[in-house]
Image (cartoon, rainbow, N blue to C red; front, top):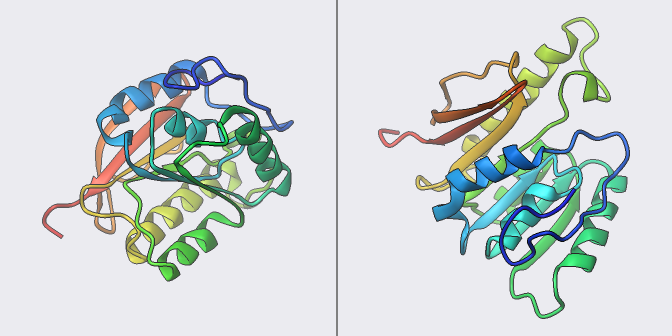
Length: 203
């Protein structure tokens, strides 16, 4: 797994075992859509995994990236990749948090933080380590994503100009509107969909 574009283009990332990395073509397409918004942005990378999406944002000159994953193995890997890739004189603010995504959203609210871009890439389908046994992995992941989207608005960490990008399985259909987030567009790549939300202007 490598950085796709920007000042760290081509540099290799460390990868935790057993996670589903975002494919390079999907990552490139996502950041092509976000291109005008990434430079100078504050980015929250939830369910960071390897940290590849947040590091891609750093490569494309995001001003601040907060990485969140509930696995210490993953956050240690992210720290290793950043130590390897990002120069010591890098001016961007970088923070790595080992915490549940929703708990991290509450923490960001408590710290009065707002983010221009929030990225959600939870493990899904056969890659999920745990799920609601009665409802199955698809329902579990839909509920997890919806809960995070709700928390993002309830805890007011996204300005009205902000964007939320959710990577999910094609069968994990998401609502057109949730709280004051509305679906702006979707990018489809095989079994993967990226749903991009923005704040509703009339709310």
